[in-house]
Image (tube, helix red, strand yellow):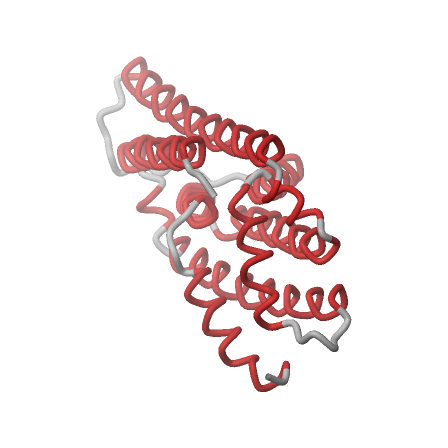
Length: 220
């Protein structure tokens, strides 16, 4: 099957995979809801940079090595679980701090929105967060070595073709995730109300911890 002829099937598969719930979606929704669209951009870029690096590692054979090695897969699985649980605990702590702060100040108003702030340091932190979550995901290695070979012809250069396909996936996912972030950010003032923000931090923390536990107990 020619690469151009297989492109529609590739795009459809990418859309379905990108829209499925997971750590990436949880991070983007939380970031966009609590800090606005501009703060969600580096998270998306970090996730997509991690995806592209995994694609190149798959083409170079490293991803297959990780997937085949029990020890490498276990290490990556543990690291991925720790990262997600740590992010979830940070969300729980943020919810707890907001609750204590509101109680100490005697603030009973729910119509006060916490302003969204995103400095340069926060931008790089969000980028690194997205990159780390993607690179520490052992399922990414398994996905790359199972998904991409279906669209790489035997007579085509492996690395170059994989790089092109990965770039297409990155573009599609970036547009999809930024559109999602923009939609969520439109209701940002409501999400940043103190009680809503507190509840959202608690829920997103639970989701991230749950995802971390799932990664920890998952198999190939």
